[in-house]
Length: 115
Length: 111
Image (cartoon, rainbow over all chains, first blue to last red; front, side, top):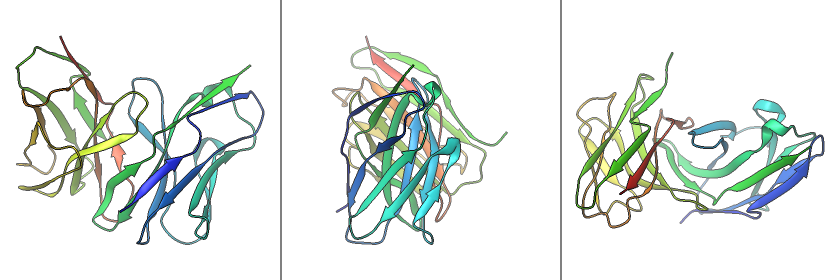
């Protein structure tokens, strides 16, 4: 069975500081990995995805993540955050193939950027 | 614009009523999904459909029903058997080997 653990439920950070949101997963099969962002009362927007290939993945809004198979991690990073990055962030895994949207989500990390 | 449309945005249900949440997509995706989101929790899969006229239960299907009569549409009915229906419901769609695209959600409240 697959599972996802987001290690921090809340991350407060000052504007222009770097941030890392941590995500570990467990799976007995190869997986696809995703980070989504959710603003209040809205749906989820894809930040970035790892399907195959390079383990360093770049996404929208200056975010990037690194797939580490040996540590089963997929941490999200941004070198300098803005107030507008305040949102909830979800890490998710899928078995891919015809079930690419059948996702197992972490519990979310609330990123709060302070001026 | 291609995307996923969920309606209504807000929905109120009385005890014992069934309500239906609408989800329509014009992305020509084969697969569609319904997720439930509760405060402080991640999303949990209710039902999914990989092809018209076929669907499978997810992790929390009890008290819910779906249909997939058209490729574009995947409505979710919250029945009176669902004991705690107050939540944020998200519909998604995907194509093979790609990410899921999400709608803007429906917030259901029991009054």
